[in-house]
Image 1 (cartoon, rainbow, N blue to C red):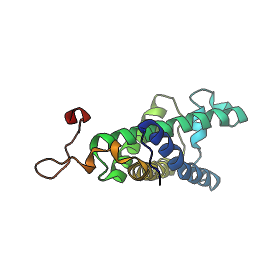
Image 2: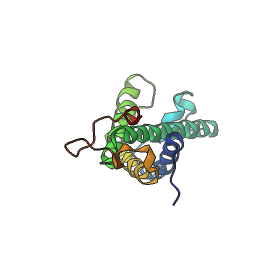
Image 3: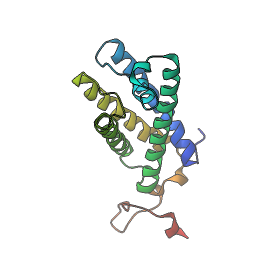
Image 4: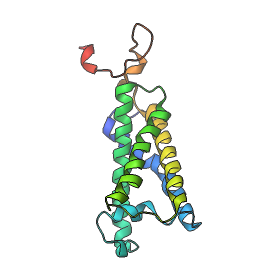
Length: 172
């Protein structure tokens, strides 16, 4: 299999591919009435009033915003793994998406940027969706990214461990 050697493209691919299961699960949760907010509705709320969040235009805007966010998340995970190595990639990906979940579901509603769910279960289910997305993203990046993007295959300290942050400038 050919590996992706560009961090930006790898992150975009990881975000879009690994974000699909979360989107599907969120739709199922919504139709089962476990949650009262879809991710696309939350995303469209950044640009449109709440009363217009269920229109065709809102769905298009929501999809664009959601795909942009998951792509940026994939890029963040890619750069994190490039800087710190591929070890524990799933946990690192989950850490990134947990922070983003806190911003979106904690800070967003407080600042009235996103729709606040009326169901407490929504936040728990959303956290699980985000954690799974992050774990998948970390796994995808670590397996599909070219070895040259990650220092961990060749760099170890005197104690045999990876440095916290590795600089490619050290090689020159």
